[in-house]
Length: 551
Image 1 (cartoon, helix red, strand yellow):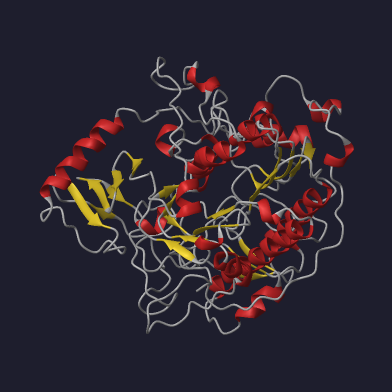
Image 2 (image 1 turned 45 degrees about the horizontal axis):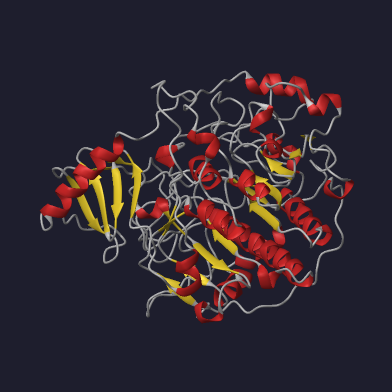
């Protein structure tokens, strides 16, 4: 999911004496009861680097550790000379499908999902859209340039955009169609990259009304988006079960970063009173905020390198998880989202080694002689299948932060944004919405700040002075690791939208590259008709689950 708070899942068990978080995720709760809660699962604090990490098996410091606009970035989020997860699984014979938010580059045709190992794609290229019109969401100031971000395989999703159906429900319908028409003689990889609950926060009234007892409208709409996505997950899982696929399925769930916390931006009812949102019709309420989430008890949130920004809600489930592991928790073992590249590759019977990248120089790198970094991902199957210790003990987070075992080192003079400390109930007096800029933290200790994130997940106590040897050792390792950080030049070409607008009649899409399958009406992959989806069968029946905690 996108921007999901660490605390904002019903399976998160709270200490005795604390009130329930109130979030309704019955389908995820049920999945965790038959799976494993991953409590030290890490990602990057913003969307695009996490997605690039998952797609390439590299830590963000070895592929992308900054913002990368979809059509404006010449380099793209994922270098073209890196082998993607879609490529790997296609090599293994899998039918690979990508549904939802791509955010891995779209300036060139070669950057699109169907040219990066996936057999079908329905989704958006950039960060976020309004849910019904598909208009790209640009900022919390309620501005947009009218361009629609919604793409179906080789061209704009013209028959789906602004048709009165929520974009996330279009994603659901496509996934159901994929599962129901899949040739069971071939293995299936379905990548659902939910746009919810990323801003703009918007949900149908029937979901918002589930949270009428929540006084904060941004929080209420955010919670509604989480519950709606949970329901979609439940429907897709049920489709897997109806086809008999679930018993041999491994499902991995993860947020791309911590939930957004902070500013209390306005919300608008979709009643025709706001001309800038007129295209959204009468569909729910829109809140223009990067807020509403709770990462309690972790410090920080989206954009922050504190735990609340990078330790994310995650679990594994599916019929491949042995019953002995059902309902368990991995609370100490470290897992990074890059590790699923290697785990999936090995389960599929292919080596994670990137042969294409191994013989390439890194494009757009300031150091013209730098080679493509090797895959960082580690195989987590022994950990999730039989409880073996995680093979990952360290994460080079960025140039300022290193995680090793139980320790987190932040170098001297590093500035960490979004240094907000949550309360157990959000928003309330202990953690209100902030009508000001986010708080920043500057590490003043020498050589840096040290936190024990196992015993002090809220990162209250700098223990560098109490553990000087650990502090010095991690400082030296960070300095050494920083020599391997990629330094790719990323651009932001503001003209790409106007060019795309002219090419596709108001839609966002690729503007460069040899050939144009959309304009020539060609299909380079020669996909059979069953993979050119235009509709889906009726939804499977909803299976009622209680909303009790997973354990």
